[in-house]
Image 1: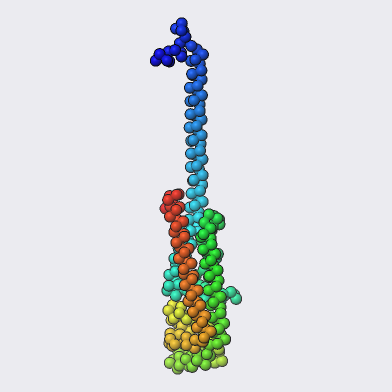
Image 2 (image 1 turned 45 degrees about the vertical axis):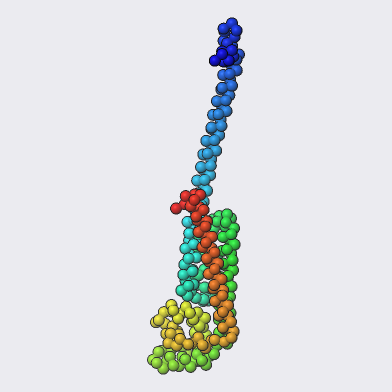
Length: 262
């Protein structure tokens, strides 16, 4: 108390207005600094909230329009592959694998969602690109299988089995000179699929199921070699799909923690 009295009072007992004024000014400056700092903190906090809200909007767009649809597709592709529920076909001169599509062709990724995801998650972009390449390679293997069947299949073997099929009362409506290799090419290339999932009302499926050994008519060394290549390529596709699924699930978990994405 004596120290404060000495500061704010002169020796004659009068107030030391200079000291008082200086102290008040200091207090006011300190208060102004504190208020300015608090205001800056609040502005920065509000700015961060707005930025996070905007980021969350983009994240939700990425999740809803690419990540979740892509994850759903990939999980379905695994099921289709495990169940042999896919097949090779040609449409307008273009070969494709039905039910299993490339990510580049996928319906998912509306707007900028796919672009935004790939910009932030390069590892996922690489995995999807590698998957698309494997998908193209698988189609190429099927094309080669179709070619080798057309060029090396035992036509007489198929005709002999087809005669037995017709003799049991089944109607084969093709012309007598029809090449059975070309006529049945689709089911021969996709033997496993049509054996399990083919429409029983169709004549070619009836023939296939009538004689389960019809595949022996196409079992040449060239076909058997490509069939092994196909099996290995399908496994590679499955492995890549599993990697994509794992990467997407990791991204979704991080978004759930950071942005509270449901």
